[in-house]
Length: 399
Image (cartoon, rainbow, N blue to C red; front, top):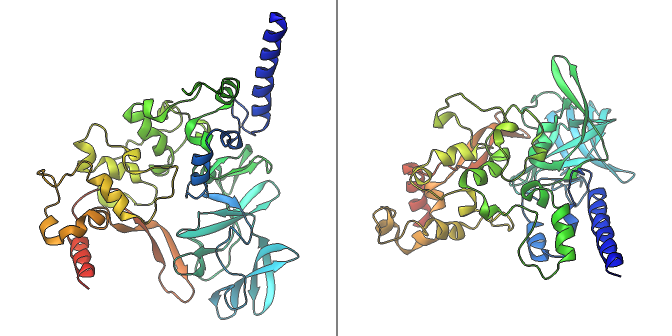
């Protein structure tokens, strides 16, 4: 009888492991984030509203923020040249017209961007992915020319490499690479894409963890999965820097970077010296943070000091200000020198003065009729004193 029980337990364990791995295209011990829901329902529910979770998604009228209604569905390059967003036979398309005649069209297949600031759109041709010519600027409620596309012609031919998905998705399988016009061109398995940043992208493969916890439901201590809190400060920063430290040449795909792994095994180190003024606010948050006096003088400050990645906390300066004041106490020398002038409202917003939004040089959007593109605004992670922003803050407060 004991032998039968042991064999049954072993069989159950093996089945769980096999089932978990089969459910996720990454295999290699991955379980698939849907297996997290039964034990972590609160986390998964709140995480579903975050920008990380929604960084990519299948295209639909629900995920695309722009309108397909007449008079709101056009981007005009010239009076006789335009792209129109259309729905035909349940397909969503971008259609280019020249002198009123259709010249080219392509479907909305993939949405990149959570919809808070802007979205751009991708489409498949066989096993390759390309960017559509028109993006959407959420705050302006307008269709715009896709970043770095020409302002006077329609292009559908920008090939999208795996690197875009390594920061905006959880996985896509690259099947081959070829050189086209002196550039690398990636081919993918169309059925392998995992949208958004999922649980295992940050916590590592969980099949063994899921199998153990399901067999031991009363065990409260998590087994066979890395605890973020148990990582060293550098390892914690490395987890975020995979995507939040700018573009890098990779040694191997960062899809399989795991908590505690050596970042140098995945990314070639950047040995160049760049001034703060030349660090773009889009995607380079780690370098900016590490240059901040707050970071330099602290032994513990890291990304999670301010960010709870399981919850959508955007547009809540009072919440982030409380986290600033966990270190910057009013009775200490390093409290804000403007406190007396600002008054009680200082507890509601440290951010706009000390981490203001700055223009990105890399990501710009050209609305219809604009002669110059509008830079995307991103909150800088270089924590400092910004006199002009302080004056602006005081002026807005006194209105």
